[in-house]
Every structure is written in C-alpha cells, then in structure tokens.
Amino acid sequence: MVVGIPVEWADLIDPMVPQILNLVIDSWESMPSPASDEKEDDITISLSRLLKQNKAARGLPFRINIQRFELEPLAGEELGRQDIVFEPLHPCEEIYFCLESKRLNVVKDGKTRTYASEYVTHGMLRFVTGQYSKAVRHGGMVGYVLDGNVATAIDNVEDNIRRQHAALGMNSPGELLPSAVLAGEVRARESHHQRTHQTELFRIHHLFMAGRALANDLEKPAAQSEQVV
Image (tube, rainbow, N blue to C red; front, side):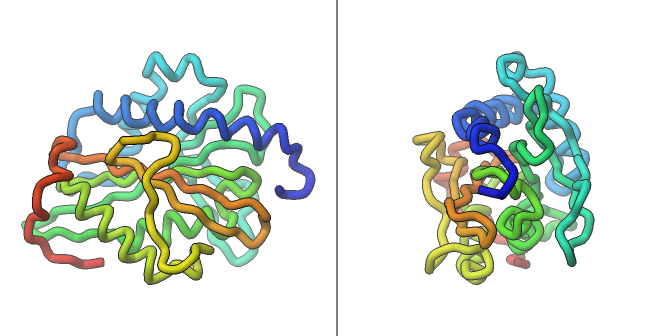
C-alpha cells in the first residue's frame, strides 16, 4: 500500500467493484447504440450521463465524475485525463475507482481498425505504472466494441497483452481471465498485475460492450476486417 494512505480508505473500493461494474453494464444497455466510428469522448459523455441518472447509482457511496485530470502526474508522464471516476462522497484524493474507456473495432470507410494496441498502451499500462489509481487495488477498462464483434475484440486485446506482458507486470504468457466478480458474464474479464510501488496484486476489470450487436454475437464467427493492431 502507498505510504500515507490509510488501509481502510483503500478497502472502501474493494466490495463496491461488482456494483460499479453492474451499474456500467446496466447503463450501457439503456443507451442507444453508438455509430461504428463514433468518437470516444461522445460515447463516454453519453455513458456518464446515464450512469448518473441510473437509480442504482443512488445507493452507492460515490459521486460520478467525468474526464478528471490528474493533479500531479508522475515524473516523465504527460498530464492524464481519467475518463470516468467513482469518488467517495467523503473524498480522499487518491481513493477512487477509475474507469478508462477505449474504442475497439472501429469501422470507417468499410475497414475495421482494432485499436487493441491503444487499449493496452494508453489504457492498461497507465494503471500499471501508477499514473492512474496508484493508491488502490482495482481499476476498470471499458472497451466500446463498435462493430459489435466482442469475441474478436477480446482476442485482439489479449494478443497485445501477451506481447507486452512484462511491461504490464503480468506472468507469462499474459492473459485475460474470467471475471471473478461477475461470474458468468461473457463480456467481462480481469487481469492481474504486479506494480513496482505495491506489494499486492492490482486488478483491472475489463468490460467489452458491443455497439451494433447483441450478446449472442460472441458465438458468431468474426467478420472479415482489416486487422490493424
């Protein structure tokens, strides 16, 4: 644990993770499907609005903020902008659940770009270095799968994780595991990371949310696409 942060503050996040993830899924499912090349910020703003309006959010001891900038970025790091942040109602500056969002399988001019590499290097890696969520043990990623092909998006992300598992603080070969907090949810995964400033494992909870498809697309064969990773 980071020096100076009371353990009980960090412990606040742990039991709330399943409720936060379920809130995200429920809010996403009430949102109109984004276009296959819709901009990331526009999707995040729409999702954040629905999160705040969701009745289940009223029972959580958090306020939901969008696009929060870091006050003190790490040395050598650019100023980070956290997409969606769940902060305690009685805030402790370093205690929060960050949900970082990234587009996946973006279709433009008939071609699909996976953006799986960006998901790893501009999303996951920022948690591992401590740029995001330095003082807690959990963080979240939501992949907006804009062509609806969730299975392919997960495979592409996992391929990139394997290539960078050492930098991500993961044991070889580096893989996405079934979610331990959302058992049976086929769109949810988790990954475990050893961060240099923390003795306990850090867990990233991944949600892969389909744009123009239903959950049964997980069982369909991947559509032909230009695999730019």
